[in-house]
Image (cartoon, rainbow, N blue to C red; front, top):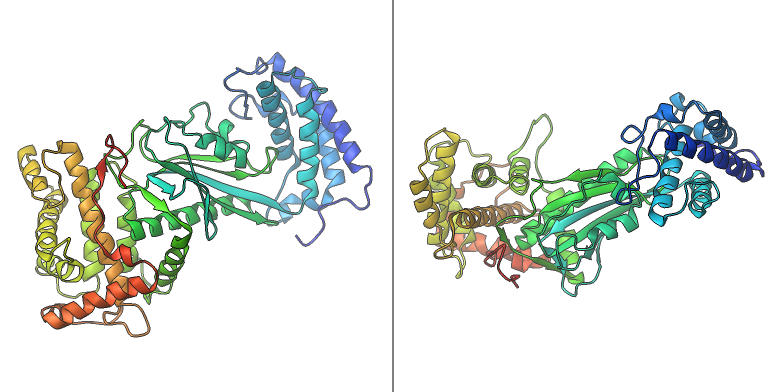
Amino acid sequence: MTESIHAEADADGPERIRTAARAFVGAAFTALARENVLPTPRVHPYIKVGRDYFGDDVMPLAEFAAFEQTLHDVYPGRFADPLRRHHAEFPNAYIFSFLEACVGRCGIEGVPYDVDSPPVERYIAELIAVLDSDEYEVICCREVSHLTTTDGKSLQLGEVTIIPGPDQGPGSGLVGVAAGLVPGTVGAFNREEPRIYDPPKSMVVVRAKVTDANPFSVAARLSAQVDRFLLLCRLLFAATAQSRWQVCGVSTLVARMNPIYDRYGKAGFMGPLVRRTTRLAPADETAFENLGTMIDEAVVKREGMITTPFDMALDRYVRTYQTDSPFDCFVDLATALEATLTGNDQATEAISLRLRSRASALLATDEDPASAIFNDIGSLYGLRSTLVHGGKIKESKLRAEIGKISTIPDNEMFGTATAHAVDRMRDIVRRAFLARLCLADAPDPVWPFEAPTAVDSILSDEDQRTGWRDTWRARMSEIGAAGAADPARPGVDFISPDDR
């Protein structure tokens, strides 16, 4: 900040704030009791202005005006001329936050709503500490399913911390983890605590200490960091990791912003029908860092473009983790595969055949032969074409098409079989994108993103086809991610014992 937030040599500032805060909170407790806001329910001690009470319930109080003026006087560098500041702050935001902190902790601790109750003094002290500091910390906590660490302990990978939860019941203890980092977490749930049984789960945490910044934009940036981490995790490990819910907020209960709560997907109790647990270790940091660098440094022309095949492929791939519809997934994954393997081609004929030929040539392994890839893409791409063009699909035909996929377990229930089909197509897209990224990697790209290349002619030659396949697999090995080039290990259904 360009000017100090503190008053000029106001040695009496803390005592003035303490006196004004005590007078206000005593009057506010009385006003809220008169409106039947207090006492709060035992199971929901948190209140929020605009939801549980109105600002007009306390703002007309003389003690409110006096408290507001005191904060103005003691912290002119923070509150003076707010409309002339890039990131305006107002005393009443802190006043409401302070009041709600006192109410919440009095309810939790079962003490009287009284100025002499211990929580009041604690949060007066926290208010003064927050206002005295030029710096504050914003934290983003997201519960992610099918994700843990190899030893079950917290793990730091770059700027991301993974905190595993116990695999016991829907609560899994992760709400407590988030509440310990962002104290207003439970109040942000609005009486609907997320309960999803989808183990193993972890809390993915990123944080930032900032000064003169908009906390909401910082929270958005941290959320994007979690998205980025999950993208890399999915590309590297074929993870089925799902975002379940997220809280972004400040590390103190008295704060300039209330925690922001987001719920992902449907509100159901169970998660996806097919899962593949990812267990991370310290050694994985190298692969995360190197793959992230490759994506960032990919030579993709974006100037004047609304979108590019590169960005479209990633966007559609990510979208399949955000929908519960397998049919939307088939369409998005087919689009992602097209964008990855034929994105800049001028020819439009026989797209399906080119996709099948290129994917099978580049991705084939002993465990996943070219014929299986070729046939599976044919079945899945055919289903996509029917969906896109509005064709009718009989259940019997869909069952038959799904049953042709090479990775579908025998005698699998239809819903789970469909989920396995999505998983198969997603893994093909994942490996195709990695192959394309490696083949376009500088300094000597053999298939650049922005230059015409006779791909089909090259891949028709056995030696060149083998050379390209060896090239991209070697590049994955160089960045510490050799296993990412291999087909994903089989997923398991959601009721089976955890896969290893």
